Length: 203
Ligand SMILES: [Fe+2]
Image (cartoon, rainbow, N blue to C red; front, side):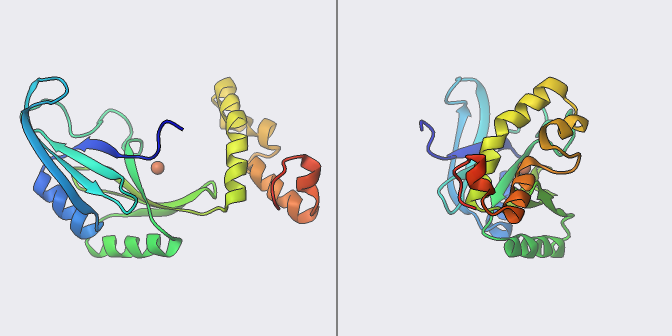
């Protein structure tokens, strides 16, 4: 695969010092790098700025620019505010719940925990500079991940065709269930279902 891992995703911030304080003190990230120029290195445009990086355990980073002389908003204000966000993965649901309590103790408004499709469970909050952040943990095992991957093209095809999840019964056989849940149910009821389906996955 060409792309090995996330290096960084970059956003704009209001205040670099406030941003450093939050990402190091609240989320415990490493303040790994700071650099600044009067001109943008890639384009040469005049834009005095500082570019700061906060590194996670796997070496990936979230990065910010404070660029006070540039026009525009800190983030996309036209789209609904839940769309643009950055998600940090943590090690367990217990850690998600503890982070929620810690953030609330700092007077942050926290949404969740929210179960997304039994894929991940997440909490959300807006800070600093109004960015939506997510702390998430994986809530399914390796065999379930394979089912998600196998399903993805069919889910996309149905969306492209209908743009209407009311049509989900065509794909999932139910208004409320996902195909993988039907698979898990079938495995419980018929232990040899995996073999019969030809999926080759371990039950
Ligand atoms: Fe997300």
